[in-house]
Image (cartoon, rainbow, N blue to C red; front, top):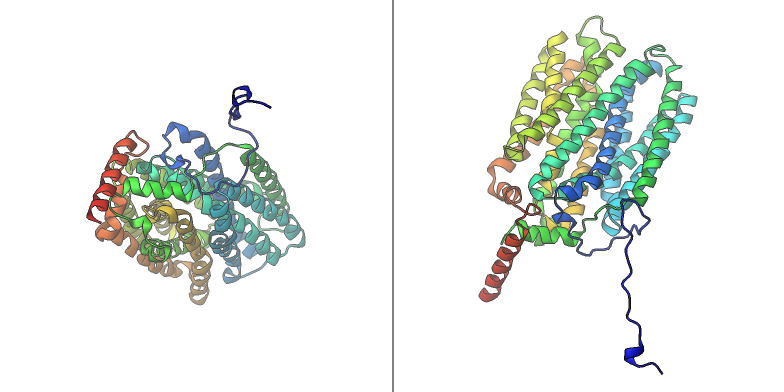
Length: 478
């Protein structure tokens, strides 16, 4: 019989280190402290996730170009061509509120990244038979699956960018990543102009090129899914976010309220619906606007102008990110969205180069709005962060609702320029959220507390001490 002294001590299991190794997709709800990582510790995971932003930027930019060419190639109206946007953005709420968000809350960010990439790859492969059959319905179906995959990616990637690392720079991180996404929106129209329709024009032969491009996209995203499977990236759990809410909202208790009472989240979702719907409507019919208001402009030339407009959009995100290092993000958001309304309104009455310039400037100031709505909307909601981000991303379904309305107005009045009144109305509705973020204390104060936090920058110890004092004080009162 062995005595206790004869027993061999248990050796700790040595964990494998490195950026790549197989590991479980299920994270659970433990404290990982990933929400308190320093800037250096977040470089690799945020680099990987930033690649995803380029992917859906490219898909979105390509969609706007195909919208106009399908009108000519397949002989469909502007209203019917909006079915592409309806399929693409209509899939978002299913992912962000349904299966994508369920996997996010029960497994984690990495699992959603892999699922979203696989869905996008499947949708890209289905573009091949749709092009062979010249089926607009087939294109819409494949686009729906691609949108479903990208909806999963956005459901996870946007909050991941916002919560991984020091909360002080949440808006800066997400805007920089979205700037990369904006570069993708430039590449899409450029490929449409110089590859898809350069030699073939608006002919059926151009669809053959589309087949090969989407095949390449499918191969790339499947390989990227494999990279994510083996990559070691930090996971941010609900418990992590509850702890972060305690550290950055001393005495606030905002994150302790039930989800149904997180009114700021639902307002942000409404603002996102209105804003994205208006943004997509402008981008979707930019080529129509250019060909109608500028004499002698072909669809190919208009696609190049769209690429230039998307270039303005990308520059706006980089410049907006830089400004946010000095000025509070909520103030930048308010100023930019105000200017969006001004210049979009001017495009209704202007024509030719002036009108196109107004829309280009509109895209420049649109740049920071989407990511800032996401980052501001999930500030301070603690354990509800994943679910709240799903609701805000679900607002992207506005991109499926507003473009058909804009197209219908354009068809009724035979004027895409006049139809720009529709996105202006939706911009005004989204502007009300910007007003609340800047002038309503219940919105503004929570956002500023996060912005003033030094968590992840060397201030976590002091924050914990203050939180403990607040808890002790509360116990004494009880």
